[in-house]
Picture 1 (spheres, rainbow, N blue to C red):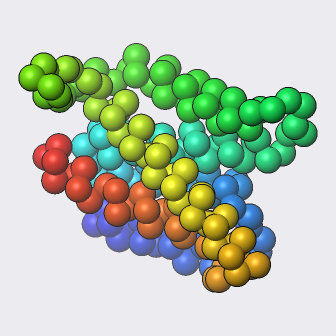
Picture 2 (cartoon, rainbow, N blue to C red):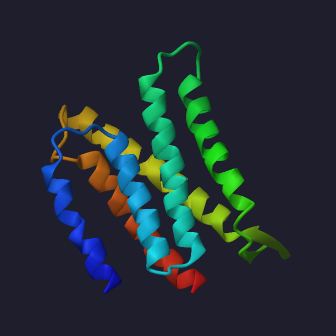
Picture 3 (tube, rainbow, N blue to C red):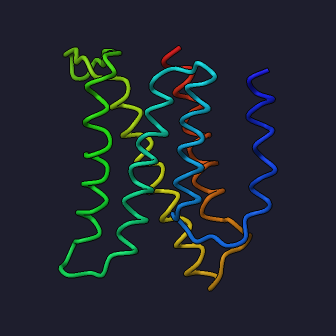
Length: 165
């Protein structure tokens, strides 16, 4: 039943007129994914993937709108967006897991793990989108940036679902 409600929103994507990579549409799609993950009762790590993706998408979007005043300004904006979104969220989510690394056990917040994965996947999708635009001189299909980002996030969520469940 819950899945049918989410599918009902899908046709609205076809009526959107204009979009650019990592714009409000991409940011909104990532937020919808996070809300959908929480609504379906998925693990907090998968929610974290979408929170991290939201933070990076928002940072990329804002950095494109602001005039560059100094070197690495875009990197600073994207990094700040990630930390200012994820760190306050950690205070509300106390779900921890352990990681064994080099014969030591570390306890890590699941939301933080998911956020880092989501941030890296979103940056990978953004770079791939830019590479395709550079190589072919255009996007290959409408909403390419949004579709690549959501597809990569979904593909990253599959192994995380099986690891943490």
